[in-house]
Length: 141
Image (cartoon, rainbow, N blue to C red; front, side, top):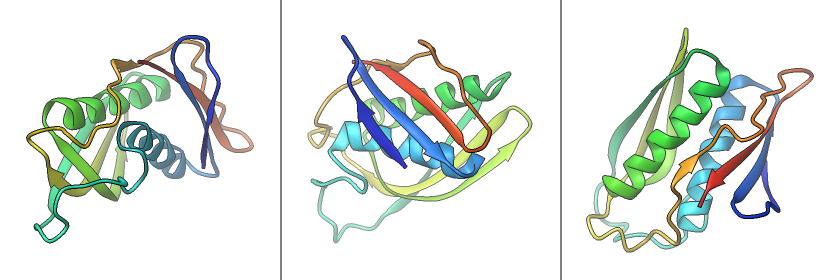
């Protein structure tokens, strides 16, 4: 679950879930919603075109670094490489890393992005893990 919250100059979202996987999934879905207007994206290329799988890999020394790294990797996949994610197929965690497999389409024109985001930030980022996984994430827009 996620909800957007007011922030002075940037974009912020509060993410909460009952598990580590649910938390990271919700954070990724929130970013996709910011980029494309929804998850799955509201406006997309021809849906009759086949979907492809693509993988995001992120590493970090702690949970906050893994989160920020994964969000920034997704920004690169969407804004630079032109991927439009439709589904999160699965998440795999290892010590200090996260791998996410998406299905989606490439959009070389990048015309379906509704906004550009510079980066996910560490600004006041602390992940609370008990009783649920929860954090406020600030994006530099």
